[in-house]
Image (cartoon, rainbow, N blue to C red; front, top):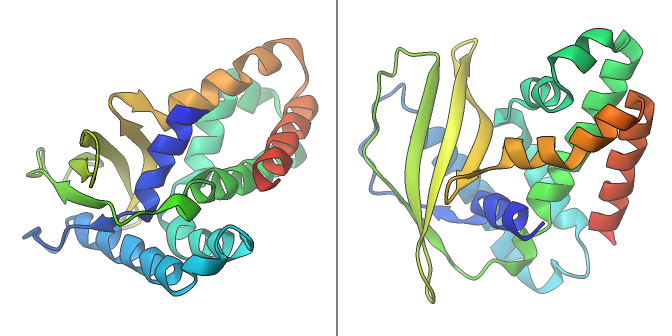
Length: 203
């Protein structure tokens, strides 16, 4: 759970304005998204812990539109389970997973302490469907943390489908959380498990 909080904390950091990216680079999109969230956090800093809905709304409004939640849902559920699920179960799973993503991304944001992030030079072709953006979280105290965004091009827009911190994948972390439940329970039970996790994060 600690590693997920570390992974998702990156959504709250201020992205470095020093990047000289091309028009098709995803970096300006990531920068704008993070800056919008940071503005909300700074404006409401005194109330973040007592009113988590402030953070939830900031994440849902700014970050969620650039996350490939649908693709992540299919990946976490797995090809076999997804193919066996009914349309109703797929919709329910995606809805529950979306709420879980919002809660998971939001949970560490109240702990924001002016961290920043510096991007490394982009590698690979911007014409590729998949792209990885490597960066470093710069901390006021302690060691800096390597961070990677995995993005996919969809309809002319880059979308995040995974985030890795120190080589640990958020997507893999979600998969491992639900792997046993998917093997031993029905999809409906997995959805209930996800909803319980949301309630736990919200408490």
